[in-house]
Amino acid sequence: MQLPLDESLLEALSLWALAAGLAYAAYVLVRAGGLRPLTDRLRRRFVLGVPWGTLIVVLGVLGVYFLLQGGGQRGGPVVVAFRSWSFSYPFGLVLAPFSHANEGHITGNLLSTLAFAPVAEYAWSHYATERGSHSFGSWRTNPFARIAAFVVGVFVVGVITSVFIPGALIGFSGVVFAFGGFALVTKPVLAVFALLGERVVRLAWRALESPVVVTEGRQQFVTPFWADIAVQGHAMGLLIGILLGIYVVRRREAWPSLRWVWFAALVFTATKSLYALYWYLASTRYVLFQAAGVAAIVVLATVVAVALARSDRTLVPRIDLQRREAAAGVLLCIVLGLALVSVPYNAISVSSGPEADTGVEVRDFTVTYVEDVPDRYISAVEIPVLRDSLQVNTSGVVVTSEDRDAWEAVVPAGRLAVRGYAIVPLGGVGWRETVVVNRSSWNVLGGGSTYKVFVRKEGDPPKQVFTSEPANVSAVISNRTIQIRPVDPGFEVAVRRNGTLLATAPIPSAGSNASLAGLRFNRTDDTLRALDNGTRIDIARRGQGS
Image 1: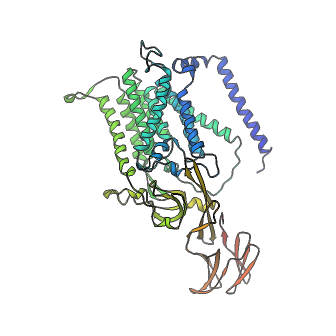
Image 2 (image 1 turned 30 degrees about the horizontal axis):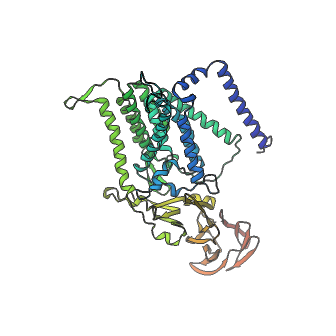
């Protein structure tokens, strides 16, 4: 449907409306004195009322994304080289928690950072909160030293979430969850408000990015949202933040309300999808243990609340073990358990496999396309009881590097089939190269398809790395069956009768015809038709990117 006004004009009007609404709200709050108490509170905790540690962290993450990964360039940021593949690849272990896979990834994490990091920094405070302490009285009470300690703490937590988490992770979300964990045990009410405020901030950001959205139904490749969640990394970050918060609360004896802590922990873990316990069944099939996941977050919230109970009731009198100490011990054991599981994954040596022999090499990387082959990173860890569960086959564009113990399906086969092409950036600090992957295909009547996949490094000719099986047209015309087959070069039509091959010929170019075994084939643009004595059937259509 046609828009009533020019789209650019509508976007400008919408942005002005958004700005006017925000300005009006700010004016009313200022006039009503609603902001003065807030600014006074901020000045009591922050130097000049500004969360400087949060701003430094945000700028650092942006620097890694745009300056090191090449975010914003064609094809997006370099990803594979910035994952935490193994202990033998320290570059990835250090930079992975501060790197991101795409613009949406970093935007989401930084918006969450701006929501929760100031609450955590507020609880930490630039000024010492102990009674009788004075700013600049010692290095521990020096506001600038405390800001630096906050930033250093963020870096340390980030590296911990990278080193002691199973799986090749990338992203700042582990630290974001640490901010949330620290906030919900030190300032649970503020944490809940931050959670709600985050939703509003995300909505406002989407409105700024897309003031007017015009869309329609379309075909696309979609995976479940929870299948892209690194639950283990989020859980590790959350628990580290909670344990640090418990330490600060006990040291300062600033006990929060147990009920608010329980509520904040439950709402945070539910909203952030920590219930999403899932595993792979195939490259695009997953299983979600939803009921078990919900039970886990309820129990976790309860244990966190018990760990922050004011009373010090004894659980085991013989060893003088208090209930809150036991609860904190349970949380610590979970952290240590996750760290222990990470050891075999981070100590593995990953083979590129024979499929890499057909790929295109870019320094130590190899880019190729595979169909139904084992994910060599997942299957590299051999656990006798779980051996079958750890064997996951995948299909799509794969990037491998034995020097980095890297093996990743960067573009699923289904997504490549829908789009027809993919751009894969490779590189590291100081260098970057882009690889283009094209899928040339014909989709036949009956739902099948036949295709070839080409990989091209910029400046080089394309290399064919994969050829599929021929595709059979479901229609039978005059007792003849038709098959579309990949050949070198291009594709051809094959006609059979009773299983006997009668003739083959290249698919005609657009706007031309061809006669074959008594049938006539006509191609109009991307559609191939078969004609015979008045019978006219669309038998195949050229795919995207061909």
